[in-house]
Length: 196
Image 1 (cartoon, rainbow, N blue to C red):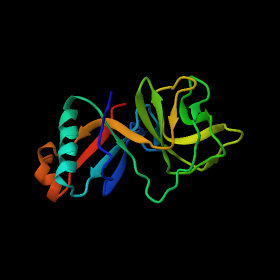
Image 2 (image 1 turned 90 degrees about the vertical axis):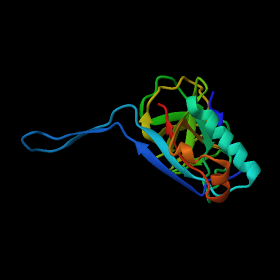
Image 3 (image 1 turned 120 degrees about the horizontal axis):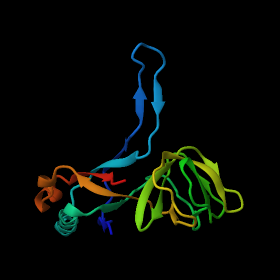
Image 4 (image 1 turned 30 degrees about the vertical axis):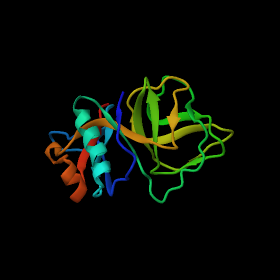
């Protein structure tokens, strides 16, 4: 199970990057380039934390150090965006693949382009971004366009989290700078890359 990073402070900078698996095929003797989307594209986030108190710094440094061999999860703030009340959305139908997903369990809800959400499969959170606005009808949201494409087909009724999405993955970055002193006076920086 992923190590949950503290929620005592929000990052001062959170930069998403799509780690893409797409390939461009260029013909040897000229002609149009063909772009092929492949399974496996996932999100990475570069995180910058503000300077923090000694007690906050202790908790953050301990969590980051503990994550050497495990994944971490970080709640994604969406500043200025009111998530509203999405209800308790679930995957509607198994064996889904591609760049859209069918969901149900919503109240009256509109997913907004750029909004983050998770699909949870076997306890692991997969992060997706809504690609275009979509209003639900009668609690269902059919054909919600997402980025990137589905990389692991979720089972029917897998939980979906719009209310408090997280990025879950392995830490990368400048581990030597994860000290209490650095956290107090400069702030911490690291990257989280989804494992799948």
